[in-house]
Amino acid sequence: MIGRSIILRFEGRWLKPVSFTADGTVRVIGRDAACEVVLPDLSVSRRHAELRDRDGG
Image 1: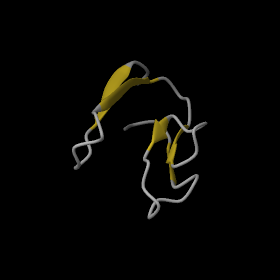
Image 2 (image 1 turned 90 degrees about the vertical axis):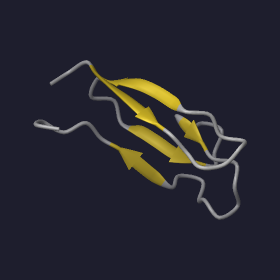
Image 3 (image 1 turned 30 degrees about the vertical axis):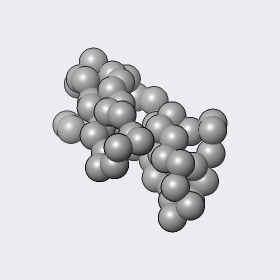
Image 4 (image 1 turned 60 degrees about the vertical axis):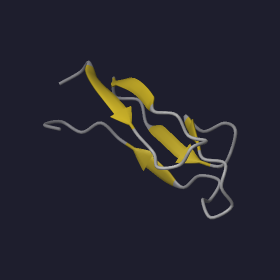
């Protein structure tokens, strides 16, 4: 199912919700500026997690 909208919401006053379309692209969350979702917190690794779109949701 391509084209679903994904919204990530984070606790914390300095983080705004992030939204994107599930289009098969791997999205990376982490501290590194090259990440799709940047979390500026030292407790988060540079490439902390990946979001992958899977068949069937």
